[in-house]
Length: 187
Image (cartoon, one colour):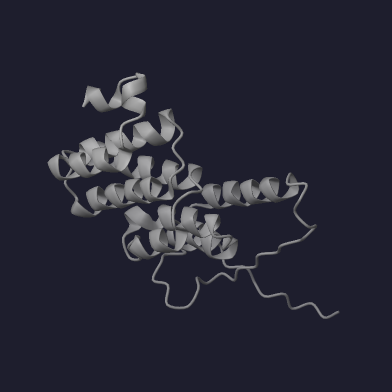
């Protein structure tokens, strides 16, 4: 493996698709290590490599082949960090690959929805599926800061309103959220 990861001119100029095609059948973990290296260390922006890394993360997470819960959490965190940092993967494809009913993938779904500009749907996941008000607030702050600091973005005001109930067809617990009475004042 060191042949492919070495900090040498030769290692950097190996045909990356061929190296990956060689490593993946041997051991997907080696393919992940190689992809992480060429993307983070060598700054490879090839969309196919970014997508293949997501595919490998998802294959591992869906297989539930972990020695313990800590290892599973580490793989999930690696996936989420990569979904946040990369702009080179196919967001629609990644979103379709994420299981809708598995809580391990809720936050990943929110991250991809955010990358797609679907902020209301992402926020709904933080509020209703993850039931995590702190993450929902952090997400709102992040979106606000990213849009207000972007000088090229047209001025806009986005308002998200949520009732005390989750979206239709949602089976999530909202017990941690208070029910707010409807506005009964007349104007």
